Image (cartoon, rainbow, N blue to C red; front, top):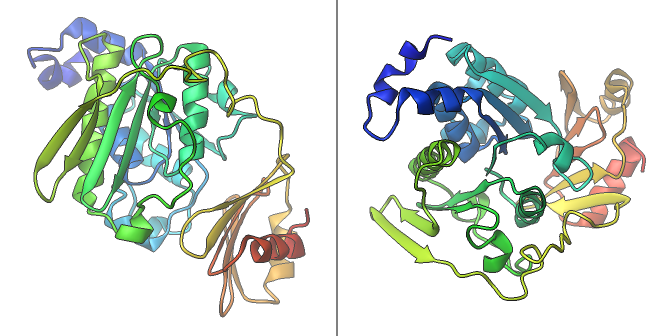
Length: 333
């Protein structure tokens, strides 16, 4: 490794060559490769993080291209993890890029992040964030919370035993629908800005510099920043060693709402589907295509993407029951 590559970074007054060597030995997990995730991943790859593990369950869609910076039109239909890995590895051969195309859940998260120095949440759902928080608190692994929608974004560093955790802010999963890219849209500058904030905080945490301890909100449209002091919540389960999201019992089939008339389905145990056989079965009912470990299906009313391990995303469908019925029709239960 040639440390001269990072000379412009180490010339900055708050970072030394020793810090750069620390970064080159660091291991970071980025969960979610959407708008914020791709921004963070590229910035940290260029900054010389030693190992970056990319985790995402989805494939690239045309509507992603407006804000998800690593992808282009030729990538539509491909897995985000594989595509991001290829592009990031081409940017910096010093960095080891690992990719895991999977759904993060209570059965696999500890294994995936067990040796990491930092976890960066770039997901779009609260349940996964609670799960990351439990894993972080149990293993004393720092993590960074990020989110963006509309012109706004939010981020917070969560350092176990040092500052309040995520459940100190949110005691339970909100029952109301939170703002999302689908409900309020998103400016690509909002997600890019939060990605930049998170990347800087990641470097600070990894090199043990003074870092932010506030919940930070930004609004790029109005060029406004708010910093909110958070206090530890008395009785917080995670802070007191009870990890309710991490230690839950296995579910038989998890079906979650993932957008307007869209559902994501995850089987309790990963499958090993024969996509060639499934292709032949489904092409009789609509248009089919296969990109690596994912099969895409589309008919006059529904879009259905099935992964080799049994995960599926179904769009243009109104109820959880209809989604389950369609899944069982083609994949089984």
